Image (cartoon, rainbow, N blue to C red; front, side, top):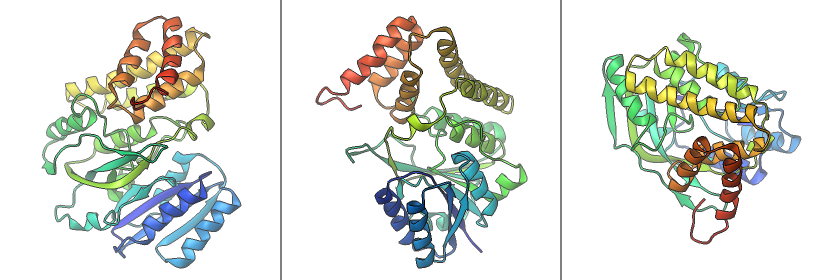
Length: 328
């Protein structure tokens, strides 16, 4: 039986990054796993690399599709998967040697596994975020929601529900409740997927092992759709999710996230002074660098001050990023 299916969408990615990603899959010691590589209309050069690795190792299963976006591609991967667990890897990232074998170390068969990961900026400098200690939780839905809140707002600063690359999901739960990524949303889709999934779980495994290596760069963001209606879709998705949770502190945290997107939507629709790209850049930067106090303060200022001030702040970030010693 296949223990875990790793879904990797491929679109336009550096060939060096792609090979690094595939090499990290190739050295996985667990044989009862599969790597579902899905071309989302990727160029021929990238597809050739996919075919090359599929010939090297039978665990690689390569599929080609026309471009439909990362969420639709992941959903296709879920449908092809045969593993007990499913996880997702971005084609410009890479995983540690023990990534797949870790799932075999649990005798309690948790409904979801959260694990730590490394960040690497464009200068390939690693840094780490605080992370909960190893633990296993099981209990009523109310008790599970308390643990989810801790992960949603760890140390009042870090949102570990906002990624899918740091989790193992049970395929049986995904299939039973038809949980899929929202295909109309290119932002915050991971968190929406995770929140929809977690309302059906009764156990959580947390491990401190850094199993995933996450590259931070801005090249992908600028190619996404720049349509304010996307934020409205996110607001609607979050509204439907709020109704699924009963623990008030967690509901309030989701409501606050929804309010953040309403603020984005409100400012975008009410002022032409602030370039739309500036807000996309700020959201991307905030989402990837929540541990940076300057980022948090600047975003709070954007929501508190008039659009003209926010415009100045959005450019102040670009100036600050050049100051030696300040990490942005």
